[in-house]
Image 1 (tube, rainbow, N blue to C red):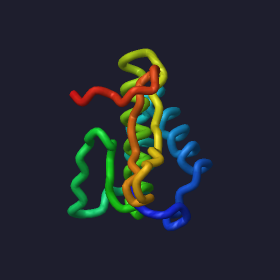
Image 2 (image 1 turned 60 degrees about the horizontal axis):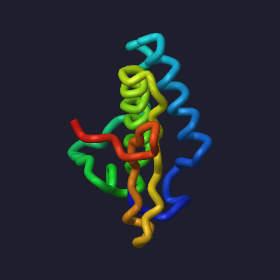
Image 3 (image 1 turned 180 degrees about the horizontal axis):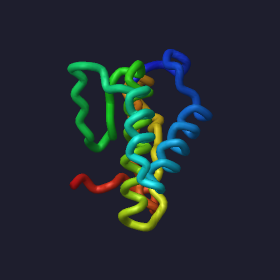
Image 4 (image 1 turned 90 degrees about the vertical axis):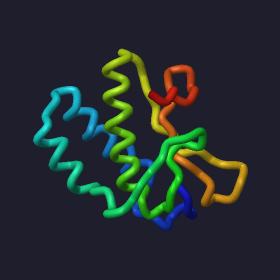
Length: 114
């Protein structure tokens, strides 16, 4: 997720709150609530994302959409594996625009693509 800190309306507290909201509704499988919150963080038309070794990488303006959906994926994976799954914003050694968002397993390693 590229871009300088502060260019997007996201902060650690809002990312944590979104993940909590998603998680609570997924635990209960409240699909109506999941649909409602998903609409608040809609994917921009034409946006295509690919997940690779750097996680999801795109412009920082898409962080809201990506973080919300990463929270969904983390909760679903956690339920499947009965383990903790993390959502990590990477701090690249390259320029800030090269940062990414990754899902990590309980050992802190990137999830294997499936």
